[in-house]
Image (cartoon, rainbow, N blue to C red; front, side):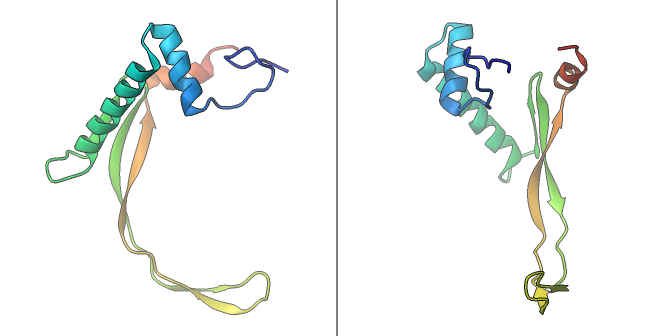
Length: 115
């Protein structure tokens, strides 16, 4: 079994606190400063993705492009309850906006490098 970034044998995705601590350790910033950077990144993304003056696109340098996409609504449709076999009507879903994330080349290239 491998080890995670903290040196323990259990491999799991890092929590928010662990991510902040790792970035703080690597950059020499405090955890509060790292949290402030993420808060600023969130504010920038929100301003670019949502609102009247938003362009609907935002890039996280070296990682991904984020953009807003329109999802079409669906009509009500008939279905079958798999437990009872009863015929049911699945309600319609309205048209909505969602976020799509496109990984950039440096992030995609990580998967192609030998381990």
